[in-house]
Length: 367
Image (cartoon, rainbow, N blue to C red; front, side):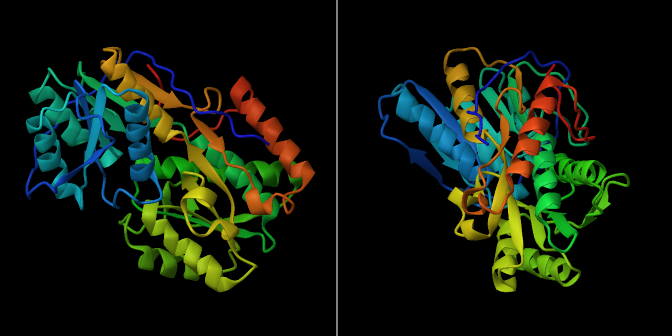
């Protein structure tokens, strides 16, 4: 099966929101990308915690920033790195003070902070990755200068769950998250539904540890950085019989991969956000990945802002528009049967056609 190219589609954004400043701490120093010293347009990124090289969404977003600068010499890009949530406001303000024309906040946890900064600086364009403008309580409020970049990753995670159910040898798989927030639980919901679909269609009884979709309860680290906690959590699930792990936790998810590596050939994993085979050092343990085309979406958003076409639009990546996808099986290609591959292709098309609907309370909607 082939991964579809990631493309950006724009629709108008309706209700979106306001927030309260909760700032403290000094902003970390910023880093420039590219050599566009004479550029007239400055696009700046504020990372979430986890580092710029988190093998996940920060790294992917920055790749999109660098790509647009490579293609358009009139755009200069830079980023400010957040160590924790206390860095969001000072980093956003520092970006404003630096004269940035377009500021991209990475991560839904930053939505309220980005919204507040946008309302205070209506002449500057902003974007939120994995979120939409909202107040500190998460209530949407309308803005005119915040672009929302979101992904219906329940769809790609559904396919990952189906594959996990097909590949498990123990009949038990597990998932866990970094924090219980929509960009995380949407993956877990889709994964659970994919397993349920396999059980229904194939008469299997694969059990999922770590997430109860109906109750919306499960296992979370309350961290996206603590790989040690990720490993201990994964070790526990392995001891309970799980032979496929699905961590949804950014760099903390590396703990699942180290646990799988220590457990030997019998335990493997599925990555999220990026193609983990390419972005991590544990490709031999990864069956596939539930990807989102974050780099392309950020690249296109910055270019749209440069062209004065971003405004307060919203983009939702789906299987239909190529914004989410199931990554290739890489080293596991021979292990995944032709039958399973054909079923995944058929399910993909059903989701695209709308005859199969993957539902999650966290699924975003273009408006």
